[in-house]
Image (cartoon, rainbow over all chains, first blue to last red; front, side):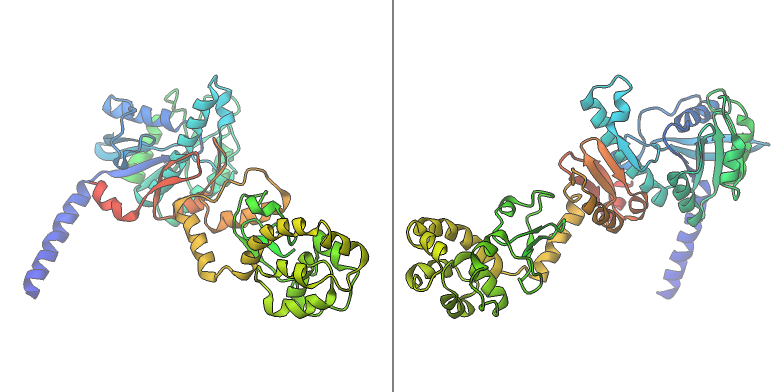
Length: 213
Length: 222
C-alpha cells in the first residue's frame, strides 16, 4: 500500500512538473485607468501573434472585462518565452458615471459603464490575488505616479513576490517624465516606452523575456 | 434620547413618531432603547406634563415613561408604574383612577376631551411599549449584521452627513469592498477586494451584488 502510494505520488509529481514547465506564465497588465494597458497588450499581441487582444474572452467565469491573449511566444536572443497576456481594467478607488458624460454618452449608458468598470476593478483585484504569475505595471509617464492606487498595487505585488516590470508609457507625449516614475519605485526597474508609437519595444521584450521567461 | 438607531446612531426622544417609519437619516429599522437612567435627556412630551409635580422622580425608567402618558397625579403614578412598567395597560389606567388631586391645566385636558387624546396616544403607546419591553437580543443583532455583510452592501447612505462620515469610514475599513454612493458612483476598497475570497461578479442597482463562492472555482475554472 505504502509502495503504491509512493509510486503514485512520484508519478503525479513528475507529470505535474512536466505540465508546469509547459504552461505559459500568465502575465497581468495592470495599472491605473488610461495608462495605455490595452494599447500595450494589443501591440505585444500584434507583434508576436498577428492578432490584437480581441474583445472575445477566453477567460473563465465569463468575465468580459479582462481580456486574455494566450500563448504569446516572444523570441529573444534565440530563446522563446511563452506567456499569456491578461489585459485588466484600470484600477481605481472611485468610479463616477459623470466622467463618461463628457464623452457624449447618455446617462443610462454612463451609469452602466460605470458599474461595469467597478465590476472590472473587482475582477482585476481578484485576478491579482489568484491568477497571475507576473505583472507588467503600466504607468502614464505624463502623470504623477505617487498615488494611492499605485502604491497599494505595487505593495501587493511585492508582498506576493510576483516578478514585476514597471513601464513608463507615453514617452511620445510632451510632459513625459520617466525619471519621476523611476524615483517613485526605486526598488524596480523602469522601462520607458511608447506603446502607441512602438518606441523602445525591443527593450520591453527583452525585459519581458528576462523577467517572465 | 431613549431610542437610538443602531445603524447610524441617531437618537430619538421618547414618543418620537419620526422613527416609526424608519430612521429618517439612514433608513435603518432597528433601534435600541436606552433607559432614562442612562441618559438624562427628557423629551418634549415628557417635560411638558411632568415638570410641575415633583417627588416621584425616584423609580427612574418606568417613572419617566409613566410621565409621558399619565398626566395627572404623582401618587397614582408612583403606585401603579413599578409593577406595570412596559405593559400597555398603563395608558388606560389614569382614566379610571386619577382625577383626584390633579394640577389645574393638566386636569382639564385629561378629563373633558381627554378620552380621545388618550385613545390616540394609546395606539402609539402600544407600539412603544412593545418596543420597550422587547429588548433586541444580541443574537438578533448579530444575525442582522451578518445578513448585510455577505448578501449586499449596506444601504447606500446617500446623503452625506458630517457625523456619519467617521462611522462610514470605520465600516468601510471593516468589511465594505464596494460602496455604492449612488447609482453609477462607486467607491472601492482595493485591499478588501484583493483580500476577499469570493469574487464579485456583478453589481446591481439596489445595492446587491452577485459573488462567486470559492467552492465554485474548481468547477468553472476548467
